[in-house]
Length: 132
Image 1 (cartoon, one colour):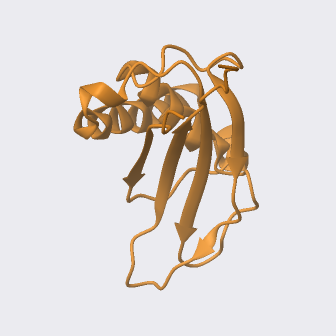
Image 2 (tube, helix red, strand yellow):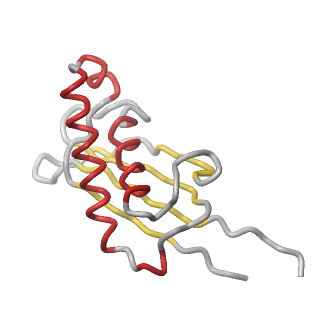
């Protein structure tokens, strides 16, 4: 059996909430998305070439925040931009249902004020079982 390829990238910044992104002007929202997409594309450059161009993946999103934490899934705006960074870095070819078979959000972790807020994106390659 082939072992699935995996990876994890972490950006230490407070994810923007979906609620906050609705209140922002379109240009401000665009700047945020561009920052997160480009940062995750840059972080993905550390992923070995052999672990890129994956056909299909499962994606997990984790975040940690000091102070008031967001509702689960409320970091969607930042997570979507981070996934776009994986596409830009050619970890996956697209972010459709053909490539991302499952997207899981975990409840935000409360971190101490001394620790940085973060968003962590992990992926696991989908390995199809074949009869043989």
